[in-house]
Amino acid sequence: MEEEKQELENTSPLIIIEYTKTLFQVIMNIKEVDGGTENEVGIVQEYESIIQKLEAEIRNHVRVEQQLKLYIETLQFKNDEMQAKLQQYAEKNKELEESITNLKEGGKILNIKQKNNDVISNVIIGCKPQLKPLIRKQGSLKKKVNLYE
Image 1 (tube, helix red, strand yellow):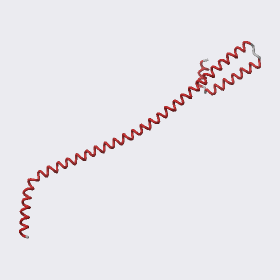
Image 2 (cartoon, rainbow, N blue to C red; image 1 turned 90 degrees about the horizontal axis):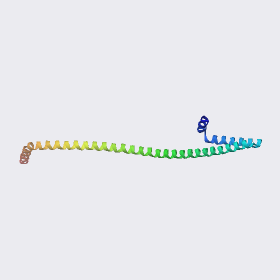
Image 3 (tube, rainbow, N blue to C red; image 1 turned 180 degrees about the horizontal axis):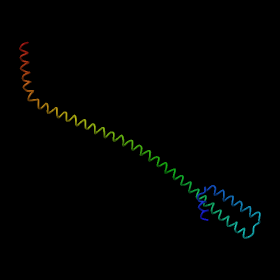
Image 4 (cartoon, rainbow, N blue to C red; image 1 turned 45 degrees about the horizontal axis):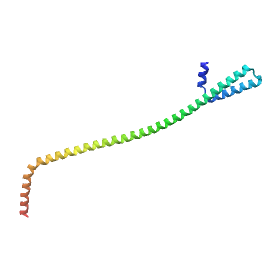
C-alpha cells in the first residue's frame, strides 16, 4: 500500500486525475451491469467517496504546484534584477578604483613637482652668493662697453 502511495505521489497529477476518472467510470459500469447488491452498492459508494477525496487532493496539489511555480518565477526575476545591479555596482567600483589610481598618480606627480621646485629653490639660493659678484662684474663690463661706444 505504501509503495502504491509513493508511486502515486511521483506520478503527474493530470495522469492521476485521468486514472481516477476512468476508475470511476468502470465502477459505474459495473454498478449498471450487475444492478449491484447492497454490499456492492456500499462498496461503490465508498469508492466514490474515496475517489472524490483523491481528486480534491490532486486538484489541491496542482494548485500548490502552480503557486510554487509562480513563486519560483518571481524569485528568479528578483535574482536576475539583483545580478544586474551587482554587475552595475562592480562596473562602478572598477571605475572608482581607476579614478583613485589616477588620483594617486596625480598626487605622485605633484609630489615630484614639489620636490623639483624645492631643489631648484635650493640651487637658486646656493647660486645667489655667486651671482652677486657676476652681476657686479656685468655692470662694470656694461659701463666699459658704453665707454667704448
